[in-house]
Structure formats: structure tokens, C-alpha cells
Length: 144
Image 1 (tube, rainbow, N blue to C red):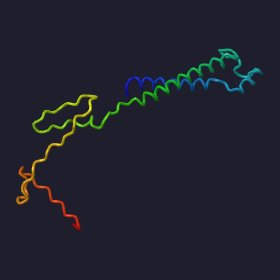
Image 2 (cartoon, rainbow, N blue to C red; image 1 turned 45 degrees about the vertical axis):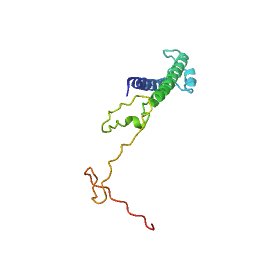
Image 3 (cartoon, rainbow, N blue to C red; image 1 turned 120 degrees about the vertical axis):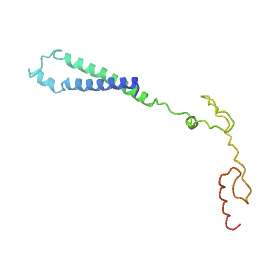
């Protein structure tokens, strides 16, 4: 992985853990009825109603950052370098007596010429002139 996606992923995980912690710190809606009768934690650091507003807004802001990092990770995940053509991965072929041409990036490939095969020897000897074994003859088609 490269540096930017790794950094965004670390921030994404930290934001997710912060959202979980903020949601667990908040009181449910049913806890207000008990606080009205003097039960439990009616006197908190933020006041009777201040914690709900602060924690709710903090959760909303972190949720916005979470969505932004999710979109950023999705975008960065699709930015992979792919080869433009299969021919880019093939090394150049050297034909006898010709220099190897190096391909220019972005230029269309040169005409692909197939080198001529050596001529075959007479059928009486069965050996080509180059000393390589001859290819076997194809069988005749039935009915001809």
C-alpha cells in the first residue's frame, strides 16, 4: 500500500472507534424520566441537558468525517495502474540482421512483420537445407 491510502485508513479506523465511544457515552431517551425524579446521574460535567447536545453534535461531526473517509478510501481503492495494452508487456523481438527497436510510450506499434521461413529441401531427401528435420506431411483428406 502507498502512504496516502494507509493514512486515510488509519484515520478512518480512529473515527469509527470514536463514534462507538461517543454513542456508548450518550444516555438513552428513557433516562430523562429517571433524572427528573432525582435518580442517578442528573448532575453531570456538562449539566443536565448540555451533555446531550455536545455528544450528539460530536457524533454527527464524526459521522460526516467517517463518510468522507469512506468515500476517499473507495476512490483511492479504484486508482490502480493497469497496463494499457497486452503488447506493452511483450519484449521486443529481434530479427536477424535488424537492430532491436525500442517502443515509444503512447505510439502505435510498428507493423508486425513475420520473418520468412527458410525454404524446404527437395522432397526426395526429406531434410530442409538448414539441417533441421522436415515437418511431417499432412494426411490427405478422405474422399479426394
